[in-house]
Image 1 (cartoon, rainbow, N blue to C red):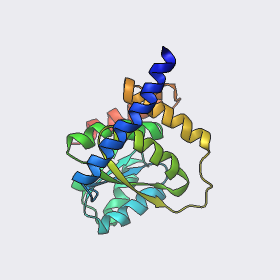
Image 2 (spheres, one colour):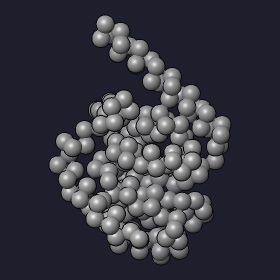
Image 3 (spheres, rainbow, N blue to C red):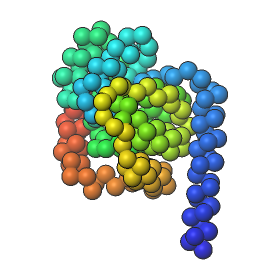
Length: 194
């Protein structure tokens, strides 16, 4: 019985996600926002340059420290009202799970997804599950680096976590040793935003 349920869910989830992604692409063929996964100042600098020619709202998920990030975007003359710095994520799965609801509530159906080239395989796989389950399409924009691509193990593990999050709302982020510190930083930052 459990195996049958697993098989049904294993076939149902990709079908539902596929239909939602197709619908998102049809309703919003061009990206409506920029989503950058934090991890290095190079990603923020790349995003700031990219945003100069793509006048969209920018979300950066758990990137570099707020003052430094704001300085990078200010130097690129990206207005503060376009920039959304969010520090709730502790890993790649939570980069998506912490922001997908906000993106959807703002009517965003298609985003540019920016992260390092070595990280893009995992980011795309997770985005397909989490953004796709919410009907949000994405166009990947890799930031060049000299790192080798991430392993299949990391991708498979996080796709499993993403699917688990879609069904339960929990991605296991509390198991990450940086979770408490990131949550405290996010709460502190929320108090500073007018």
